[in-house]
Length: 303
Image (cartoon, rainbow, N blue to C red; front, side, top):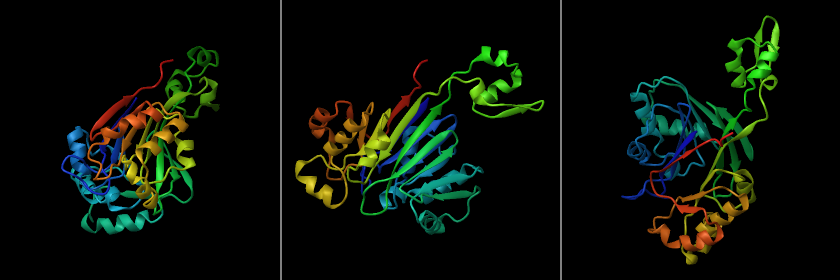
């Protein structure tokens, strides 16, 4: 099970009833965040979620509306007596940007590990999350993210008994660990069936529609994508500033064959996104004009 909460849906600047775009997920006691604009802490509190379990924060890029909330968040996590390392992932320049922001958050009771993305795409494994970063097309270096919870094959107890595998090794093997006992090495493939379908979420903002988005979003249970403009007269502006219209996002969702799409990162001028959803749903029926605090519980498929 993966809990997903879209903390805010705004782009450029926070509004009285719309926080800046940020995503948060929870899995097996560990939380992940993507982007942390101004006001993100308030959005977390409004959702009733906690700061302390955040183990990794991914950044799409370093425009202020995506990272300016980080110093305050770090201080709040420190005040919660966090001691475990915090992993930050982002485009080249991450360490320099974080160091500059930490001028106002210099002393923390936990270490920070910065992982800079070095190519067009890169994978990371953190606390059960498989994170795939992929480059998109904005006016600065920018990445989208696919978050997957992989699922091992079903454990075959009868096979484990037939192979005389000690009972104490069953649980670690079921979790994918290689174990050794009495000079014998046991591997998960000895007792696990074929890998089962996991859970996949793709998050993408601040970009033109490009092939890499549809490729990485393919088959996602949830596709969260910017729909900065809904108005037809804003199409030229979207192209000029390297953003996306709501209909363009719907086209990507259709191409990727995702289960559902939430639109986010609205322009401050887009006061009523729902007004433009009829045209969007003609392209991709399972589209939703997301609102701050929208949450969903994504479940593994039943065997």
